[in-house]
Each structure stands twice: as C-alpha cells, then as structure tokens.
Length: 227
Image (cartoon, rainbow, N blue to C red):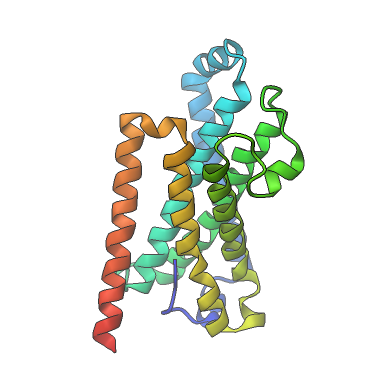
C-alpha cells in the first residue's frame, strides 16, 4: 500500500476534488447496482435465512467481514502495484484513487462487521468491547488482533488527508502500518472467522495472501537492486 512514486503535488493535481467526488459517487452507484441485483436474485432466500435463524446479526457481521477483507486486500494490491511500478502501464492517478477509496470503504464495512454485533442479544456486547482490544469474552486474542488491525487500517486510510500537513516522508513511514494491519487482520480471519473453514473462502484467503506476499517480496528485491 506504500506509494513512493507519487508525490503529493502529483496526486492532487491529477485527482482534483471534483474527480474524487465523482469516484466516490461511482463507487456508491456500483455498490447500489450490485446490491440491488443481489436482492432481486437472492433477496427472498437471504430473507428466509435471516428470519429462520436466531443469529441474523451474526450472519450479517460475517458477510460484512468478508467484504471488508476483500476490499482491504484490493487496496493493498493496488498500493503495491504502484510502489513496485508493475502498474506503470495504467493510469497511476486512477490506481492511486482506487487504492485510497477502497481503503476508506473497507473501513466502513469493517465498522459494520463489528458494530452490527452490538444489536446481537446473544453476545450482549457493550460499546467499549467493540472499541477496546481484549474486550471480548471468547476468542479474545483472535478478536483483539482484528481490532488492532482495524485501528491501524483506520489510521492509514485517513492518513491521505493529513499527508500535506506531515509531509511525504512522514506519511510514507506511517503508511507502512498498512502491512501490519493486513497481517493482523489476516491472522484474525484464520483464528476467528468461522467461514474461513469453507473451501472457497480458504482458497480465496490463501490466494490473496500469497499474492500480497509475492508483491512485497518483489518490492524488497527491487529496493535492494536500487541500493
């Protein structure tokens, strides 16, 4: 998610406020379109599933968690494509915009993933347990890793908006927290995520994390060659 190749002036000149607003609007339109299609196709089945179980909020939380992880993974991949120059044949400003907005949307889904559990009468959680690591009574370590990863992701996602105040160098070092966030969230997925035992998701998690590992390894090799 580190972006050495783009300076702040380049980013702001290529992505003015109007363009950023258009990207956000387009993202919401796509999300609404996909969501509407899903409701038309599987809405009745999903409704029956949620009303037939005493844990509807638990299922919604699991779905939100998977989406949040997928969005965060894409944000990391786009960032690594920029920093390794593997994406040099595409529009860097657009890739950077996707990298930025996917991070923010991932924060939103991660917040939903945890926050919806406050409505679960079985868990009976308090707001401080949602905010503070090690507040859960079960799977304390696994959940705490996810909470720590979320806070790091939140810092990195909103660091775009303080970049001009702290400078490129400081922002670059702050952005390295993204890798720690991704590692913690990946550990959270395997330690706590009940869906991670399903074969399709196991393949997705393994494949996505392998790709990130390869991109990071390639980036380190490139840095050594430059030095």
